[in-house]
Image (cartoon, chains in turn blue, orange):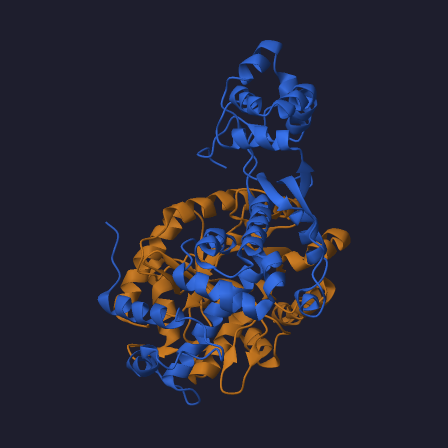
Length: 289
Length: 277
C-alpha cells in the first residue's frame, strides 16, 4: 500500500501550483487580480530582501519562461510567422493555460497545439498558422520516434510478397503525410534559414501556390527531411497510414483512372523505394518502441 | 563504515547537444559525462544515436529532473520503467534526481519545486525514495535544491531535512555545492552550518555550477563560470567525501566545449590537495 501525501503538503502544493500557472502577464509579475498575491504570506516566509509574493514570483516566471522556450524551439515556423512576443501572447500562453503539461517529457509539450489552433485561433491567417504548427510538430515526432522492424521484401519469397498485399502493414512512426494547396515545405526551409528576429523586418519567403503532396520522415542518418511525392503515392501511403492493406490502398486508386494508370506503371519502383527506406512495418501503433 | 564505496569517476561535464560536434571531432580526454535521463527516454531517433556514440567512448552517469519524488501524485512506474531501461543501456553506476516536487493531479510543472521541511514530509518522501531505489535496483541519490522560497510550515533547516531523508531511506546524496551557496544567500543561513551537518559518507557525487547574482536574490542558472565562493565550498567539501565524482553543469549561454572542460578541470586543483593530504 503506497502512502498518500500529508494534507498540509497537499494544501501548500495546490496553492503553489495555482500561483505559478497564473497566465503570464506582460510585465511577468503575478496578475494584480491574483489571489496568490495576498495569500503568499500565508504560505511563504519573506526573506530579508524579498516579500512573500516576490519569492513565489521567481517560480512563476521560471515556470513560464521554461515552457515558452520549449514551445518556441519546437515550433520554429510558427514563431517566425508571429515573432516571439506575439507567439507567446496569441498561441503559447493561451494554449498552456488551457493545456498544462500532462507528460514528464518536455518534448511532448506541444502535442495538442495544432488541434488547439484549429479550435481556438480565429484570425484570418489561421490556416497558414495551423499548417505551420502541423509541419513543425511532424518534424518533432520524426526527430525522436522509434523505428520498428521494417519489412524487408528481399527476405520474402514470391508467395510471401503476394500475401503481403492482404496483410495490414503500417508506416513507421517517424513518417507523416501532407496534402497542401501550396509548397509549404520550401517556404518553411527558406524561413528557417534565418533567425526569428530577421523576419521582423524582412518580407516572408515566397509561398508558391500549387497542389502539393509531401512526406516528412527521418533518413538513415537520423536527419529529419521532407520530399514531394505524387498524388498517387500520397493516396496509397495515406490508406496504409489509416490501417488499410496494400490491396485496399490500390483499390482506392480506382476512383481516379489517371492515378490508377500511373500507379500501375510506377508501383513496383515506389514499393522498392519505400521498402528500401524501411518505411513499412508489421508492428502497429500499440507495439512497444 | 563508509556508505559511498563507489568508484570516483573523476571530473565530468553535463552532456548537452550544443557540444556534440566538438566532442565527436575532438574526442576530448574527459573522464565521464552526465546525461539528463529524460532527454534520452525517447523511443529512438537522433537523441539515442548521439547517446550510443557517446557510450562507445565515455562512461555515462544518469541524472534526472522529472521524478518529482515529493509530489502528491502516485509514483509513475511507467516513467521508472523507462528510466531503468535506459540505465541498462548506459550502465550508469548510480541514478540521481532532486529532492523536490513537480507534479500535481496529473499536471507536470517541469521545475524543481521545494518541499516544506516537516517531519510528515520526511515520512512521505522516505517511503517513496526506498521504493524508487528498490525498483531501480541501482544506488539512488537525491540532490539538494537551490530554492527561492521558505515555507511558514518549515520545522527544521534544509540540511536536517535532507540528511534525515537520505539516512532513513538508506539512499545517497548528490551534493550540489552551488545549490548550497545559492540557498544560503536566498535564505540567509551559513554554508558552514550546512557543511557541518551532513553525512559525507552518503555523498556519491558532487555538482558544481555557475549562478546569477541579482543582489536581492540568487538564481541557479547554470549559465556561467563557477564563482569563487562556490569553489571555496567545494574545496572544503571534497576532501570530506574522501574523493567522489565531480560534475560541472552548464546549461545555457554555452561557451566552446574546450572552455567548459577547462572550467571543470579547475576542480582538479582541490583533488590534488586531497592527494597531498
